[in-house]
Length: 284
Image 1 (cartoon, rainbow, N blue to C red):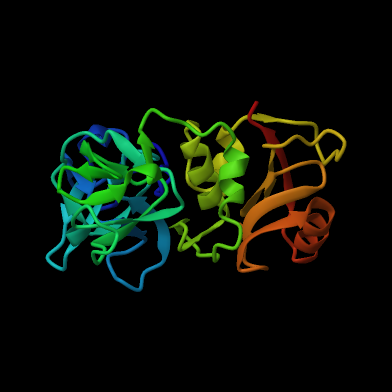
Image 2 (image 1 turned 90 degrees about the vertical axis):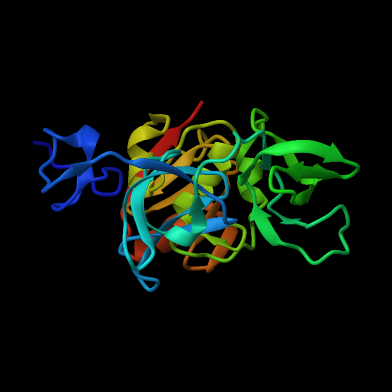
């Protein structure tokens, strides 16, 4: 038997995914049911309660394999994109619809019930939401449910941003939110994941996972002369993105926002807070 990371392993003492039978101990094993997030975003919580910690968020169009649905309206399952496990509100999920053709490329946009921006919006959508667009109607992309989204705010799902740092920079001023990954609020690793995903990089959710799995380690310490745009700086429990040899962009609780900060100031401030520097990872 293995000792699994509960964040990315659908296993509890009472229940586990069928494919883990023989690898983890559980009272019973079940096959999962594939569902899709149809709300603009859905919280993924640590426990089946609205006041439980928010570990991450799932965006519209994401697929999730559900292993349990409670009478109280919570689903326990695993996100397809990054493997994260947690509890989602059942009301935010539905059977999978047509495959996504497009994704939201703006930080945030609106979906309207018809081809007019004067209509009351149905809801707002965040960067990375995935949509099944069935037709273009003048200035709108119309999805399978009939929602009209400004066509200039969506791109084909195969389209990738060229510079993930530029994507992160667009979030400057966005409030800090533990577990968040939208322009309403996001945390340090959420910013990295959203920006990298928009640029075609597979990226795990939490900073310790990112420090292990992304890119290659550089020489120990921080050599300011050798820092490149796109390098990732890691502390214990924190990650920042290098803009240039002098500055970083990161979501942080000191500013309570995504902010641009001089590297030297961030290193001094974070060290003074007792957060150990881990190292630099280079993606390319």
